[in-house]
Amino acid sequence: MIRRERTTENRILPSKRMQRIAAVVLLLGLAPAYAQEATPADADHSQMDHGQMGHGQMDHGSMQGGSPPPDARDPHAYSGGLVFGPDRQLKMADEHSFHSIMIERLELVRTREHSSGAYELKARYGRDYDRAVLKAEGEVEDGRMEEARTELFWSHAVAAYWDAQLGVRYDSGAGRPGRSWLAFGVEGLAPYWFEIDATAYVGDEGRSALRFAVEYELLLTQKLVLQPRIEANYYGKPDAELALGAGLSSAVAGLRLRYEIRREFAPYAGIEWAGKYGATADYAQAAGAETKETRFVAGLRFWF
Image (tube, rainbow, N blue to C red; front, side):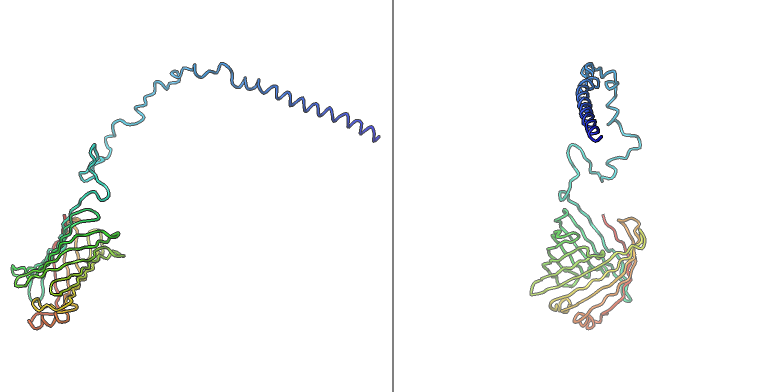
């Protein structure tokens, strides 16, 4: 029985192998015929009439271009007069010069004993990195310029929000001798939006001085702004002709509340506390003047 089973198995195996070989040969033989049916000889794309497909009658011009709709925004509406054209007028980076005049204070000052006027302005002209800066400040009383300070700087941007400044300063006033100074300092925006202006001065006969001012703008509303400000002046040596002592000479702290009718125009009212210190206070007392006073101010702030 065992021999018969083995003999039968040996006969069956060659038969299965032959069937597999025949199937492979049949598939290989049918492959070229299937390829010819999938890609018939008459499928010649070069002879196709593409015009019948509608591509030749398509209006490609209507797919782009044409006139803008009636309600389209004017591309030059927000360019401030600078337009793009054959000759490029809108300049980028540090190519364009700008100018501005800011009247920081044009005010009436009232104290317990007298009233006066005061002004402070700043003008700029130049580019982003280099510009000329004019600063002027003074007090007018009884129609006379009691005290005035004028500074002219070359200002150079040294960091984001910070400028280094080099220039000259001239002090004048009615009945006061003039003083000339070489000035250098920094001006910029400190963290938390504090505006800093610090300048050192060197004059003739060994004179030196330092002026430091800081201010902050607190927006109570979009138009109502509260502006605190502190200013201090130091001198390296006494100046008897101007009644100035060495060290801390004077300091002013104030609050101004302005209402911006427009960004460029804002009336304001405020209060200041001013004091003289050290030998400067001694000069004031000897002349019968107050060493500390409260000032009420009202005026205009505008720029263009």
